[in-house]
Length: 80
Image (cartoon, rainbow, N blue to C red):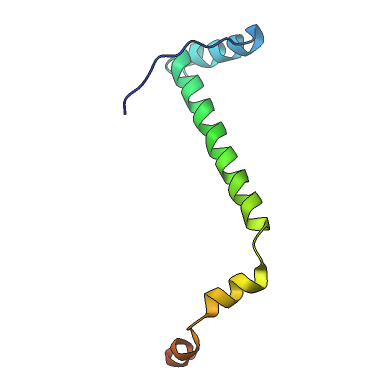
């Protein structure tokens, strides 16, 4: 993974919290804390975007698409 250096500004309270995590050896460095925090936030945004998009789906239409062409296959499935 290639990395790029960036400069950021943080509120002093946030920076003290970051430094506490590093001093307690929860993270090896400030950079790692910030990398993980940004990655987690991006993943959370992706999940919430997916959830928003799913609410736009037409349930009946999606069910129809899922079942399309399944009639003959279902007949071949074993009974339980």
